[in-house]
Length: 256
Image 1: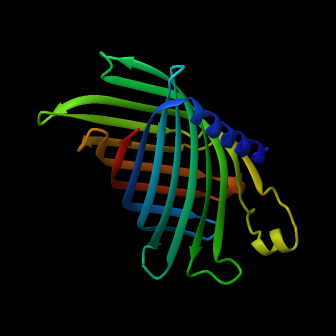
Image 2 (image 1 turned 45 degrees about the horizontal axis):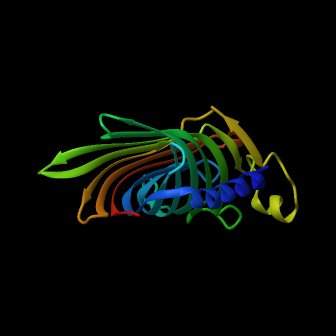
Image 3 (image 1 turned 90 degrees about the vertical axis):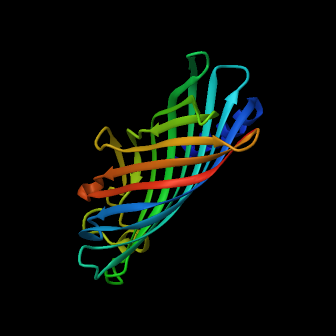
């Protein structure tokens, strides 16, 4: 089932490329604060800094009022507990694909796109304080949910600019997780499966959203300044997990 979703996403990406007539490509670097909890590793929250690289492609179809969005995101974070005697190294790779319907309002100044998305996330959390038997946690999830993009044209300082908002809301999917008290040695060396693929639907609130301002600097090029808010939560096998992220970002937008 998991591999079927991944193959479908790849096929859709290839197909949509042929129908696209207009693409908006953005590349951003974000720096912000992370708040991490994983009770498999520690009952303590870890807070620190996280760096992200975000590549986003929005393709507008010429044949139908349809927009496709592909997002690649890589992150690396470093955090510590309250008394700063333990540290954690976190990281993830995220790929999201969305297909949305288009609407236009106010003489095309306001553009709205809404539809569905699939989100694949792979990551890790390494705790420097834990013993050799339990030093790290691996993450893998595939989720689906609604996706929305909005863009509004404004005039500021006699220059045309664009305010954008985008959000994706994972509501159901599957994720990997060890069970309570289960070691990775038991799982991978001994082959002791214990409900390690967990299905969830409408059990936790998750959202990834971005508010941005695009400032044109050339005919097809703009500078993007944005705020990113990413809330990921879960409770697989009664192990509490969360990763909260708030950051500012800057990047380049190219219209093709």
